[in-house]
Image 1 (cartoon, rainbow over the protein chains, first blue to last red):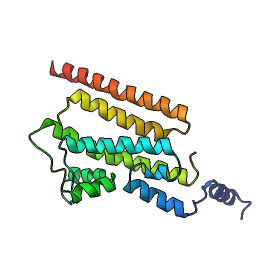
Image 2 (image 1 turned 30 degrees about the vertical axis):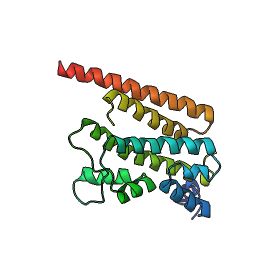
Image 3 (image 1 turned 90 degrees about the vertical axis):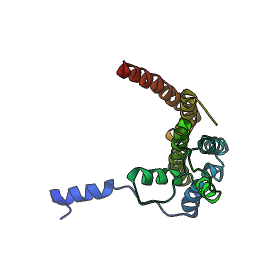
Image 4 (image 1 turned 60 degrees about the vertical axis):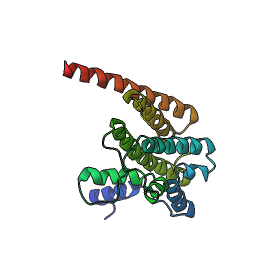
Length: 144
Length: 58
């Protein structure tokens, strides 16, 4: 069976599949911490400069968004854009949790800059998602 | 806090470029180069978009 053309194709396809990553403590802790505290996933792996730069950038973007009176989206099941806004904000992890707990981010409809602030808040979260993925890749040895 | 649209765009470009540079490349030199490239693209895009909007308005 393995010598038949169909068998050889199946063997070749099986051999091309990448090996599954083993689940280690760091492979779970690092992304969780990176989500909760932007940049911490890199810091815990002793990537100090990268971690501090990521922390500084994402936290700054989030804080600027709040200072520009941007809106923090609560969990909602309404308009698709509101749902996407929530998902983006959620990426900021602990920053989002703290902002919601402190009742920040109501948004100021009358100000044009508030719209920029809302986008800053969402993008800060999205950038943190990228940062979490990067920290995970370092944890599993896929990146130096 | 009130910022101009251009200032907001510059800040956005700065922070996004730093994150992109770090996460999309492996070596420090490549990270810096890519970050600067992203920043240039962001800022250039702001100018291009501005002129396109001016043309549309005209």
